[in-house]
Length: 139
Figure (spheres, rainbow, N blue to C red):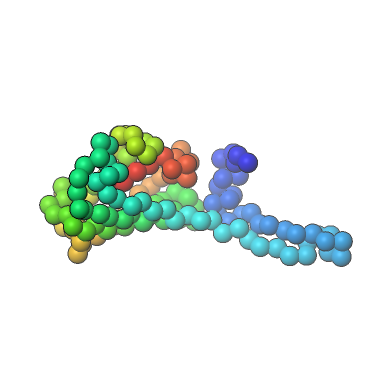
């Protein structure tokens, strides 16, 4: 099933439900509101780079889309890495290098195992669709 933009908005904002009808209750016997699964994650490693690099550094990015589907909160945690100079969200499929879409860390302040980086990003609908379609990566 493919959702059009209006259906996607309604789905992401909790405006759809599942309803099961019976002969005894034609309008519905049981119902459940569909709650959007709007949390995303990325595992970071040197093997994921394009081309791959040897590194003992690892990380994890957790991203959550708000109920209105127009803001993305993020938190990026790393380990076994020092002197981080930048971190971004790029647009591309797995295994492909893509352009920076959102800067996450620009070198100002601390970003290491003891200091994760976090914030929020404003998204438009095209970016929300790319996010849902696994169209971004973090590095």
